[in-house]
Image (cartoon, rainbow, N blue to C red):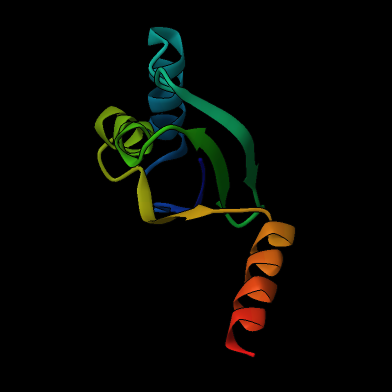
Length: 102
């Protein structure tokens, strides 16, 4: 199952602290957690971005984001996560739904 997270970094957290949090997670092998595959991880110059993960269930995705919060309190200003599917599949499903209404 695919999940998309929109995230914004906390600009109030010093860059050095953010880098330490990331180094800690990577050196301990905590990110990505088991059963989670990072498909894309993109960041803008304004320090917001998206993360696309593949995981069996939401608990594994919860771990992925929570490890960042535990490594550096206040790391994120905001996150929004939801399951997603490729647009082609979503449009196909909508077409099927429209046909059932005729």
